[in-house]
Picture (cartoon, rainbow, N blue to C red):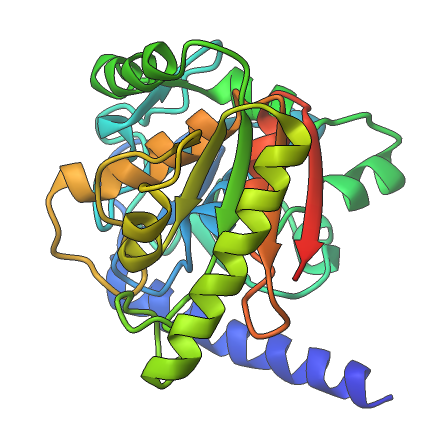
Length: 316
């Protein structure tokens, strides 16, 4: 019962926020021709969109829903960078044309889905344009309700391919590795004190050293078992610096930031997350490694879904 009440409260809050967004950012009158019906993924500076994985989950979910409803889909990802700087259309053109996205509240329905179930989306009345802030993977629900067989990686690859400058970086690291490899991901958030993310706590120095040592020990053991190069990614530059000293461990240059917490970095900084994500997607297998104090990130899980490769969590 409590969960139902909390869900209802969340829906009410989001309904209020939707109205605020509509009246704050959309014009009341409409001048010109009626815009065509669209489903539009919105990632902008009007509200938090969480991390890269959450943003991609929402994008793919709305794209799938557009297929179900036979409605054109577009993605307006403009903050803290233009998505088209790193990913470009592959077999489906998701880039909006000029003046294609309506700015009139008369012709737009804004919806926020950040944690709720799929009912608010599938029961929406018909709208000229649906502008959606979504951060959840609804494919399992769609497949169950509509009898579809959507696969996340297939839809992702219909939408996206790397831009030439991102592809250049990926090819550089693939050539450096030169063979099959295993991906290993460590998500520390603020535990090691070198990554800004909301208000998460930082460990004392001795605890940090112990955590790093335990994670390194797990990597060394895994490398010995697999006898393959290990590509290690992490949100902690401190940890990457430590493991880069180990033979057979590959790391990639660059600093990671959380997109909801740092919005003033250069494109090169934000590109690092895309390099990590797509490099992991090319591994033979991906492990998410951590302790009970570390966040069980879905970043490696969805990287594995891109090319349908094996994924496993290791709890130290």
